[in-house]
Image 1 (cartoon, rainbow, N blue to C red):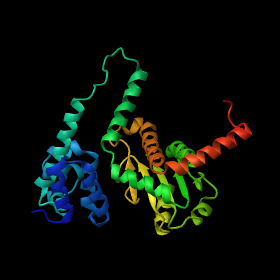
Image 2: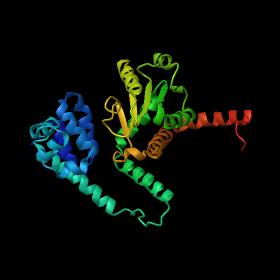
Image 3: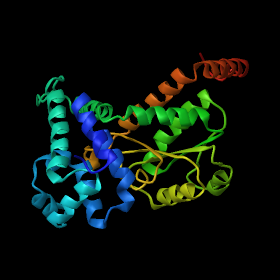
Image 4: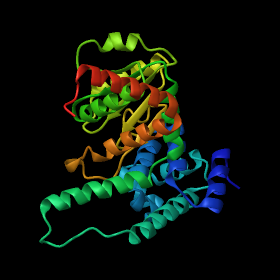
Length: 300
């Protein structure tokens, strides 16, 4: 018998619909702050290197992350499993499911004559497929509802995250009112001051992670404002603080990061809002079109 309600939920999901990593990743995020420093290292290794975690012994994992074998086993208990073998079996099932799924998908081209630009696009396609596979749809709908119901929305993204943040704020402004994009400098504090517990902040955070972004996230949490994070991995510095976290493809080469998966996640959010708040959005967009036409905003 499993040691906690979380473990029982995981067992039910395995027996009925098959294993997904979303449940385990949620538990890790919820329990992360209560884990020991060594257990945190093992948890991060689990999320970032699932294929390796699935088939290494507890001793090998301990050596890999520079902790004791006992620390690896204790993490299993801390997450609600009866032991390491039970936790590892769950991860193995997920890995095998992913392998089967990948084998049934169209394989990318490997011909040496293929254009390097085609190969670049293939990487983006692979990243988008992985983003879709790991998508937590329940979490996504919670994000959609939060953005619809908030009295105001502040979007924050700096340096590598700014372009996606700008696109999100631009799209949100066509769907609802009181949306602001946090400038990279200037009146950040004034914008934070206007937020309430009924507001929402969407923070985009991708490598290399900025200290300023983390500082802002901590300030937002202290104010009690709901924080949504779009990031590359669940336990990124801001991801672990956020109330709701949506992740892009986690195993991408850090030297070739692409904005494509982030834009895909944003497009899914916008699509979800359009489906859930259709009447109000249509009324706003009709009014916008009248203004665009009256002021000759667009050429066509």
